[in-house]
Image 1 (cartoon, helix red, strand yellow):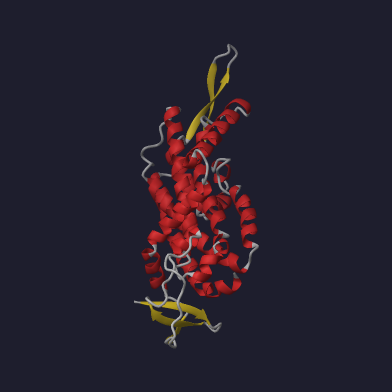
Image 2 (cartoon, one colour):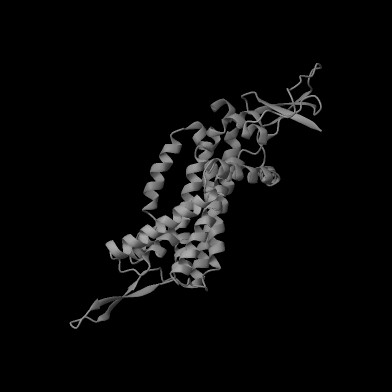
Length: 348
């Protein structure tokens, strides 16, 4: 078995020096990530001249995908490492991932019910059914924007599919998403509020779309930030603006009756995903508003449409289009990543 050392000659070609595994024992990537000394001992230099061959620095897409699949154990290791670092030396540990969304939900419930007196029933649940989607997306992109720069040490020392680094940030965001989903389910039980069971299977479809779309942007942003460090600051501004361009705080029906604005909204891949989560979890398409009559009795005054009135099959079509677009974006992001990662070591 041979170990290869890659040296970029700056002309799109890579020098591969091949030596015996017994001559140069390589430290494992886990040892480098955790900062432990190599169990292999110091690197030994071969006294003979190393044979070399010249190969192209570009790897085809199929090979990159195969390498990512083979590195799935590294992906799991990186996700576990992120979780350990985030809650290191904390007493509650991963329970903080559930406590924070629980407090947020309680605050929303109290504020909108007793202070703002929102007419939307269980507005906190409506709000949180969209927020858990946005939180996954936000966490994935914020973490991946600087992940390659933050791990410059291993990027320059170890040969591995670098796309694993931004993908591990997406994986960490998915773990946090499931903790928040558990909190949401507990509140649904506590409020004795039933979701729309018919639309519930669409959540898995929507979640797959969200993960693929977030992965595509994460891979591209992480690579671009190596060359333009302003990206990680720009992404914060863009995400803050993007948040108000999706129907989470306000209802989609605010723009539904404006045809051009409605279709502009639906071109955003996040919007159909959020609409699906709201339709399945919150479920109330319409609700009644009440007012007191002359004798102090509550009587219904009007019917308000809160959720999008699209039929079941339309959600499937929307999610299918998002899936197709997300897969194309993912393939494009991996191609761009593969073309520009050759100079990562020099830029870092």
